[in-house]
Length: 128
Image (tube, rainbow, N blue to C red):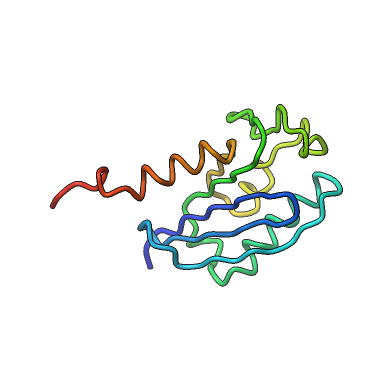
């Protein structure tokens, strides 16, 4: 099996989980609800999504979290997000990184989408 890459897209009431097996093609996708109550519940929702996706944590190489908020990319904390103020001063990335022992990055959803498009674009694929 190829390196597993996981993307989590956090919305107002759902988390979308997208998994790739090392190429831009989607191998797994799920939309699952979560409760917006406190940071610990958000972290549990991330970990449950990974544990229930059918892939082993050991096969995952990296993860990205897209959130509609301004994020401190180093700490993984929400700096500003009108609907995500309950996550202020709490890392979106550290709990999941510890749970899966892989690098996790978080950023505003539009930036993460642009990175995904660049990765999937045929312009960036070298001819072999």
